[in-house]
Image 1: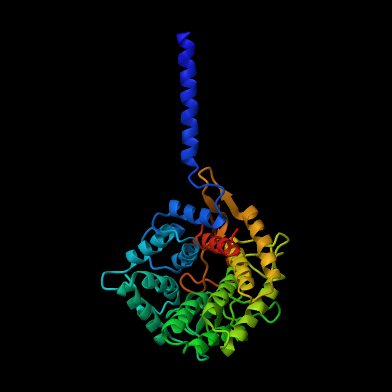
Image 2 (image 1 turned 135 degrees about the horizontal axis):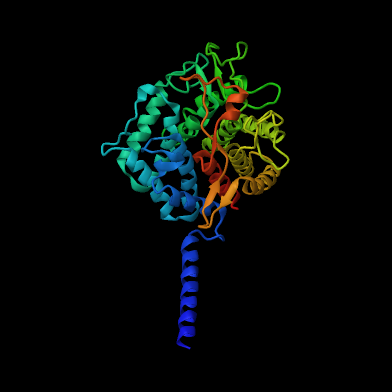
Length: 396
């Protein structure tokens, strides 16, 4: 009898322990919205935001700026200080006590450096910490002296003379527009619209209406087409960067400004054209205009950005409401194709294309093949950020 009681007690204890262990593993509830589940997953995986994308050292980086812009929107929606603190801890770790960005050198004229600067507007409004305002001013000063192509487009970096890259529109214009709307009474809005106009005139492919990754106005770099100056490939994520740049810049363009209508028209054009290149399931390809190309694949960062731009564009009234319906269907396909939820309830985004670029050493030629053989990885920062933003905008 004693033996039976002991066995029964051990059995009960084992079950209690197993249940407790299972409960401790499921840290993120399944009944939360995808936006919060993703944000909490990021907080668990990367206690410091600089660790995103597998970074080993703190870095003032556009990828962190992209993901944290989602955290900012989520904080504004939920008022959960956890999300604000994550942004603040990152920024405070990147700047010194006198209000300078660590390891930032204006002479590099790296347009990517402006993107994290967007986080400082709200931080300053909330905390009134003068360091944030000082850095906002430093980044605006970079734009003041940023080298330009003969037509007036911002160089992507000092080391890429006369080159506009499509991702540079996202890196600079939303920051520039927010600054000029907030501190300059909108005096630079025409210059901002000019950057998009140059894209429209020089980076849009005449056949597909989609955008190339880059344009060299001098046509001197080896990857540039000798007639047009464009790079060889229409990159899915590049289209995403451009569409997100448009919907986020438009936040600061008053409807009364004559260029507001122009930018809305650019957004409608690219939305209509990219919608014709989605997969049967409503996702977008790494090489966007050649779905049939051997080795081509649907890619999460491109798909997530386009979904977000469709949803935000429709929510703001820039795009027809049908784009929101498309965004919802594509979002559901995104979850099926790319999202894996582990036993802790953490969201993982699969098969995110690694970072790609042009020129440099070793030389990146920008061919279709170059984009297709770039490695994919789980939880690439741009894939996580794109999913977070799309989930917030769709309120799924």
